[in-house]
Image (cartoon, rainbow, N blue to C red; front, side, top):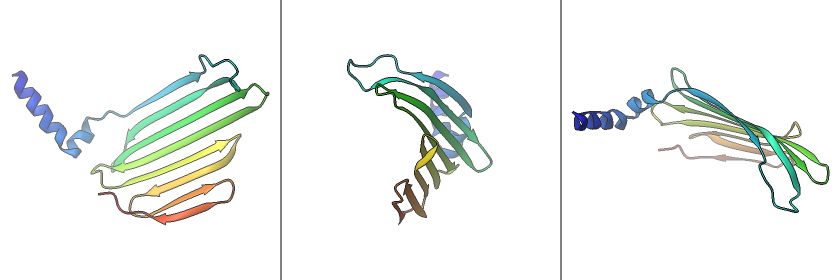
Length: 138
């Protein structure tokens, strides 16, 4: 009986559609802080939070990740860095849309958008940006 269940579960998981049905949507939040540092390090402390979510809709999995961290330096400088990542992957695994943004002290410093088979756009706060046509993911 145990062998039968093992084989059944294996074949159930092999199919991507079946595998997608086995994933469970969830959300998590992690509080982050600096536990220790080397003597003479320029960073005094770090604190913040990481948020993660995995959800499904009618067509795809949606993944979101946010990191909101504050860095305190020994010179008295405080820097807030927020990073946001989002991904949309269809049930068949044939397409992926991905976006990322990074903020420093509430100012957008980096942005990236990727759509499989389409165009990637990367922009930086310096004004530099580029576009490139990407191959479709096989």
